Length: 173
Image 1 (tube, rainbow, N blue to C red):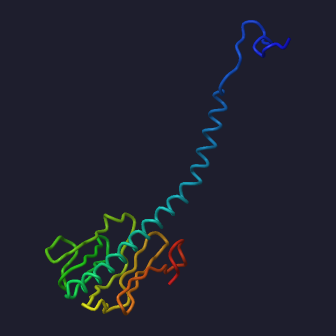
Image 2: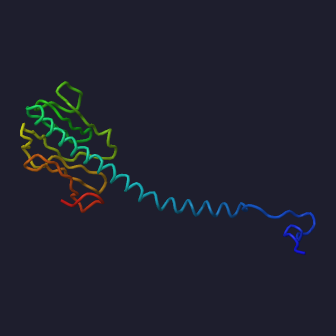
Image 3: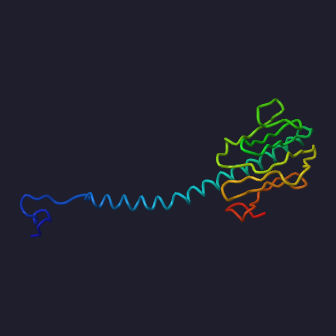
């Protein structure tokens, strides 16, 4: 006849269950060290994601301005203002500043919508009714050590490329 393990214990003792306090503290310390090692990598990845999102939004706004200029039969502009409080806006008239809401703006984007991303350089772009653009470089966006450039082809198509080496999902310039 086999005896159960609890019957093999000395009288008055209970079987041990769970973890000791020392085992829990060691596990927490190991997890804290691993978390500390992973945080910088996650922060850089988030930074790259924010930069790519801002560049893709700018490219989409350029494409939308191109489409709308052709659809409406009137030229449209993308006005940009680099710097600390950067912004860009798709506008119906040249010189319509993007810093404050105005009737001439169809859409505007401000720095607070893309935390950690800087608009380093930008040119205003005019789209004719045939969809052609008057410039080749739209803007340079930066976050940390990464820079993305939004170029505009002669036919008005926007393209995003990485200035400082290729980022995942973005080709090098």
